[in-house]
Structures are given as structure tokens and as C-alpha cells.
Amino acid sequence: MDNDFLRIQDDVCTDMAHGLANNESEKKAIDSILLDNPMRITPYLKKLIVKYDSIRKQFLPSPLEAETHGTATPFEEGKKTSPIYGLERLYRDRVLLTPHFDCPAYCRFCYKKSRVMRNRKSMTLADIDLAVAEVGKMQDVRGALITGGDPFMDKNKLFYLLDKLMTLENIKEIRIGTRMLLNSPHVFTDELCDKLASYIRPNFNDASKSKYLAINVHFNHPDELQPEVLEACHKLTSRGITLRNQTVLLKGINDDTKTMKHLFHLLLRNNIIVYYMNHCMPVAGSDHLRTTVQKGLDIYKDLCTESSCSIPHYVYAPSGGKVHVGPDTTFDYSNENGLNLVKVKLLYKAAEFRAIAKKELPPRHSETEDGFIEGYYIDGTDN
View 1 (cartoon, rainbow, N blue to C red):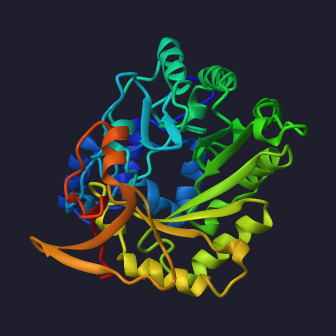
View 2 (view 1 turned 180 degrees about the horizontal axis):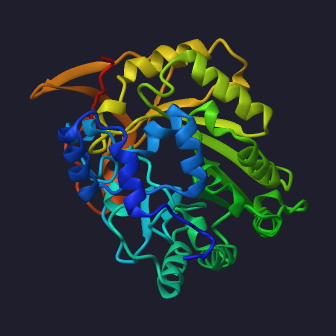
């Protein structure tokens, strides 16, 4: 891991978390939560947490995390870990690579808790070599998503992986997923941004051979767009690197049209593409942050009256794949042991899922008569 990543000491984190407790019972509940799902923040985030409630709720544990119907792997139940460590494939045209499984800060709603908060080992250079060789054989695959953890925690390994991917004929589109721009904006130096921009390689004589690199960023609230953060984003966009923002819909943080509209306008004005508004997945400990899918649709309908440049894709994600919600979407519900479930027919074929994931369909999923995946998604609440 690079030496320029600092973290707040565990005892300081615990003291900050205890500050949210109303009594000794809640302190004990928080201590119990931290044993399984530890807290981590950066010095930069600490400054923001003290000032902004919207950011505090995303990174500091709540006693309410003890009350949950979620799972540590809400979107990963249908995937089989590849024989090659750090390489996964769920979709036909793209693969996922995880060179580094840790993060400098832990979002409480992270759907990768089973990886990020569990000290999973990173890919070795040998793992990367094996993974890239395997990806080169997947002729249907044209894109690679480098995710985490956070790839920027080990920049040398990230660039090693990028160099290897650039040698593959079939890989034309590379995306890097990160929240580093919020928790450690100082990392994005001119030197780093110049290096990233070097992987954008257009071919003006044959556009099909152009190579593309973009970064998927993650901002949930206007309070996160501080001067240092926006400056770091500008260092990337001014060098031609596309930034696409993925927002998570979070109860009590951004679950209203006014906040979302303000966030998306600010992103647009700072050259950041409004990409996804994700419904918060049913990850263990996140029930208190999850709205209903209908609440997200209500916000999305309001946003649809705006310029199309500031309208995201609204999606929720059963284990079988993402579901895009449109303004005319209606939801089919069922109930299981008191849980509201959204029933949906996915756009993905069951046979293709089995062939790619090398596993049977996830729990609460089945195959329809015409061969598609039918799934159930745990809904949130609005009370």
C-alpha cells in the first residue's frame, strides 16, 4: 500500500462513534457492530464529518446497524470467485478486476463489506498476469472495470495492471472505480493525473482501435463537493479523463428531490457526468439507510422534468443483475416473513448467467418459461 494514505487511529474512531450514542446500551451496541464491521476514516474526512451531518451518517456507525435483514453479500450471491484471484465476470461484455481489496475509508452501506472490511489480501503481480492472460481469451469482453476496495491505494499495482490491459486487443474500454476523490483528494497530484491521461489513446485513422480510460466517482451529497475535491476532479477532467458519478440513495441524507437536484446540477457544472442513482442495496447493517424503491422512483420522476444532462439512470440491483427504472415503472410486490420483496423479470438470460458465472441462479431467483431470470429484491422502508 502506498505510504501517503493516512487513517485515523482505531481508538479515535471508537470515541467518535460513541459520540453518537445516547446511553451506555447504545455504546455497547456500537462496540459490537465495530467487531464485525469496523470503522475507518481519513484525516480529511474527519474534518468534514465534524462539520456535515450528511457525511457523518455515511461513515460513522449507528446503533441501528444491529437491526438488519440484509446480507454481507447482497449483489455477490450469484457469482463464483474465479480460479484466478481478483478476476470476476458477471456480464457478457465486461470483467471486473480487484487489485486491492481495502479502502482508506469505510462507507457504512458498502455492499462489499465481506471483502473490504475483512482484510482480504490484494492481488499479486502474478495474479494480475494470470488474470490479464485470461481476459485476453474472452473475445466477447471489450471492457474492464478496475474496482476495489480502492485501486488508488496501491498506485504502482494499478499502473502495472493498466499497462498489461493496454496490450490486449479485445480490451478497448477501461474504467476505474474510486471514492478517493472524496476521502483523500490530495492523492490526485499533477503527476498522477498526467499518468492516468496517458492511457487515453485515440486512433483517428481507425476509431475501432481507440483505447479509452474513465473514472467512476462516488458523491452522494452537495456537502461532499468541497474546494479540494473539485480541484482534484478538475485535474482529471482538464486532462481529458471522463468522470462519471454514481450516487447511492440514502435515507435521511439525500432522499429528497431538492438535494438530488442540487447535487446533480453541481456535478454537471464541474464537468462530471451524472451517471447512476443507485438504490441502496440490502447489505447487512444498512436497513436504516434504505428507502423504498418507490421513493427513488418518485424522486426520479421529479428529475425527469430537468435537462436530460442532469438525469441519472435509476437502478436497483438484485443478485442477478441491475434493473433500470423508468418514469412509468410499476412494481410487483410479495411478502416473505414480514419482508417486502420487489419481484422483477430481469433482462438477462438464465442460461447465459450460468455460463458466465459458472453457478446456479442466486437465492430468490428462478428461470422464467422464456428463459429469462426472475428475481426478488428486498425493499427498504420510508418510516
